[in-house]
Length: 122
Length: 188
Image 1 (cartoon, each protein chain N blue to C red):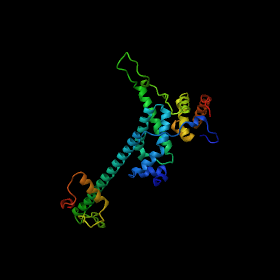
Image 2 (tube, chains in turn blue, orange):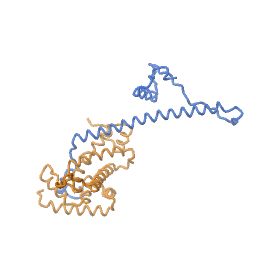
Image 3 (cartoon, rainbow over the protein chains, first blue to last red):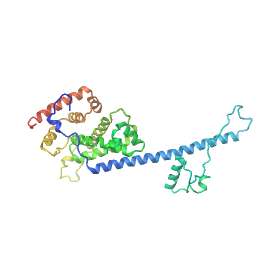
Image 4 (tube, rainbow over the protein chains, first blue to last red):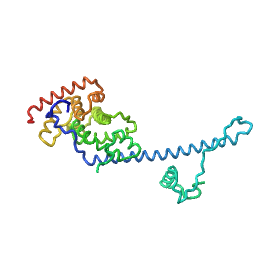
């Protein structure tokens, strides 16, 4: 309604109408699907990012190891590889990282090797 | 018991949904579904087509939410998408008018390239008269009237219609004049 005006006849036109239930169901389902897709993409991105970081660290280690001592500049900073060796999670170890949980869930979904197998952690 | 999410702003609900909270979307949807549906039913005039435009609008909204910049005008953004989607359908229909396979039979009226709203029967007599009076407005005037009814500001209406604020105001003025004339006989 326009401010300062009295209620007019044409303002009896409803501002809101009930939406058929089948439309509600369709739209909310689409939102749920969209949300699930985004979650899956985030998990994949984290896994890829984690893999890329490990590869970069491996490259640094390889470069430092393979370059002869004399060829290195004098002030080479000591490179500490930011790689942590994954430990097989213990049942009582509740500090399991989110990434590990996601890897576990993803591998379970994709029927990859069982994260509880020794080989998975090597 | 009131859902605590209901106290959140549109922007907060959108952010929540994009972080994975489907419940946030549901609150946002329920906040605007009735208003958008009323707007489209009166704009389109045909409830079956309005249903389709309504659902396609929300599907597009879901898809575009990651690009939405929160400027506190979600409703204007939503109505703009709905209105543009409807106009796109009209343009497509005008480009590809349906052809009857049987040459003897003329195409049905609804299939002709018309985007004029069909007379939709409202539940009560006043509603019917108002809906009929809306048909007397031009498409632009009807849009301004219906958007204004949803409390969208004239500035936003002008942006939605890609026109000046003065034109939007003038369309509203003409729309009201026509509606007053058309509805003069209705008892208050």
